[in-house]
Length: 95
Image (cartoon, rainbow, N blue to C red; front, side):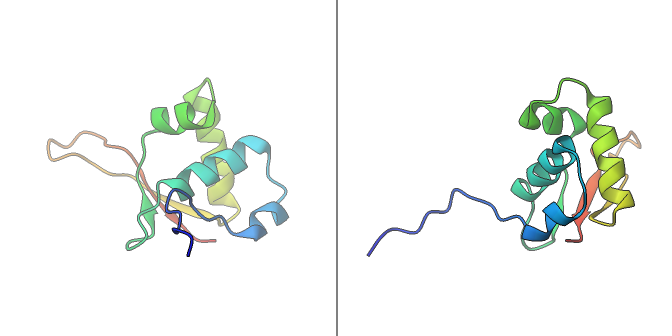
């Protein structure tokens, strides 16, 4: 019997039905890759998302995240550190 591979993540096929730009799909896939299966949330920094997707500017990540929120594919929540500073956002995947 073959050993089951665990180095993968799943993306819903319907992601291609939302008329998304390649950057939007890349960001969505990155969030899927970082998803905590129990809580259905991911919390990578914008810098990590950009690096993981090969995107040069964090502003481009912001545009993709905005589209994903507007299309109802993710919810975005601000997170704060114990010192009251901004931490990385929390992203809950809907699709």
